[in-house]
Length: 177
Image 1 (cartoon, rainbow, N blue to C red):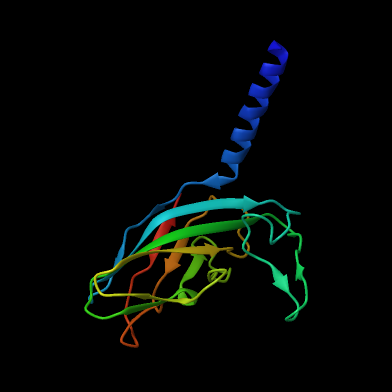
Image 2: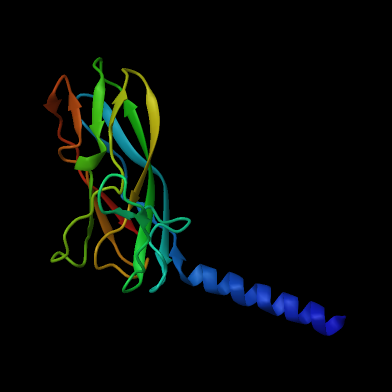
C-alpha cells in the first residue's frame, strides 16, 4: 500500500512539473487608450504548447481544416511543436459612439523574430461595444514558427477599432513572460 501511494504521489509530481514546462505566465505593458476614450487592455493570457504529432482540431486546439463545403473535417498532425496563445481582451468604450472591433485586424507578432509573419486570431468577427460599455473578448492565436511559450509578443491594435466608420489610433501592447 505504501509503495502504491509513493508511486501515485511521484507520478502526480512528474505530471504537474511537465505541465508547468509547457506553459508560461505573461504580463502586459499596459492598456492602449485612444484620444476618443476607447481603452483596450489584456484581462488574461494563456499560452500552451501543442506537441509535435498532436492532432490539430483536438481539444484545446482551434485549428481544423476542411477541403470543401460538405467534406469531412480533416484533423492534421502537427509537424513541429506549436504555440497556442489565448488572450482575453477587455474593451472599455468611453466614447459617445458605438465602437466596432474587427478581431481579424488584431495582429500578434513574435517580437524577437521579426522575419515571422504576424498571426491573426483563429476565428474572428466584428464586435460592437456600446458607449459606456465594458466588454471582454476571447481571441486564440497560433503564431507561426513559435514552438514554446518563452517569447515576447507584440499585440498590434492599430486598425482594429473604428468609431463611426473611422479607424482610431491605438498603441500596441507588449506581452512578456
